[in-house]
Image 1: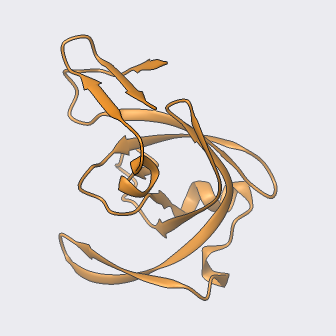
Image 2 (image 1 turned 90 degrees about the vertical axis):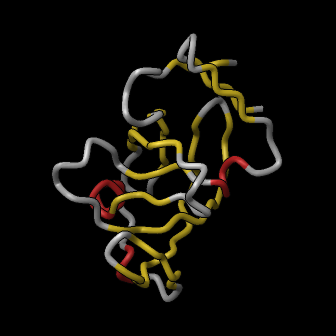
Image 3 (image 1 turned 90 degrees about the horizontal axis):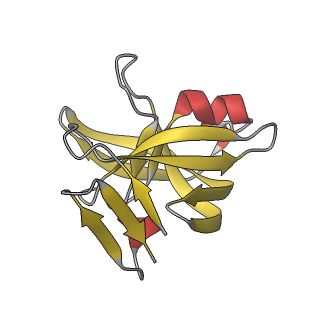
Length: 127
């Protein structure tokens, strides 16, 4: 099954549904093959009922401004690009208010599958 994206946009953005303890959320995640781990902004995570501050596990993240240690939490389920992952670990990090996305879908979500991106048609598939 293929999903559409804007092939002329700056980012390849995909929709992801995340199940939370309080409510579910539909997020806009940038597909990022340069990111080892999937990262979701703390604001939508908190809205869904996750509290990253309570996580004892931290991961080292290298950003443009330096090295930071951010919480790693396990989310109940994430659905994106026709695939589902349960008890999936994600990094929780604050994104700037001007950001048009809720996080990034990283290599940990893509591994073991075939990712096809067609920039002529603006379609992406994972399977």
